[in-house]
Length: 260
Ligand code: 13P
Image (cartoon, rainbow, N blue to C red; front, side, top):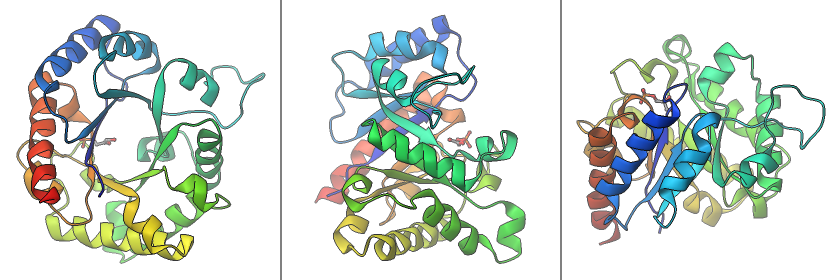
């Protein structure tokens, strides 16, 4: 049985003092929820302070990116080993903002997924089409390539721990999430692609596929209840104690229903 994961992507927000207060509030308001997994990905500068606040809770730490080399002369980059050393369990890879603003290609993303797995981090591989691609009827082709290239060369044993996040670019930060039919259709499709790629029904069934893109306490119940949705990757609504904690609470009640 897949367990819902509510993952916060703070993006380039939160000074350390703000990060401390936000984390403290989230810990306080979510400490009795045990049916869901929770992850917080702060900016690198706040990893340590968030880590110290989530000690002895069920909340796990994540990073928003990683470099694909393990050490060396790569000024400005952060290695997977460094993330592990900082206490990270997860790392977000291939977010559309990295593809769009930092030129990340499927090839780069594939290297990052591979090196993250090698270093015992759980990659959250992000995929998603632009509005233009959807309008041109190319959404599924784009998603197919993002998944297949992203996972190329990675064996089944390693793949079993990865998480995929479907984030339609047009829904990110726009207040306009994909509707439930669109979300379920894509998630079922991604699971099928993974099934074909791994030649394993079991693997495809067990991999968690999150939805991201304007998820909020208003639409979470509907989206999280969908058959192939296993959680959310949350941007804007993860920056406030109340909205993020509500999302965790909603996920908790949805998970209980799914387990019945
Ligand atoms: P929003 O929730 O702000 O739309 O962002 C989604 C996202 O990009 C999470 O990675």
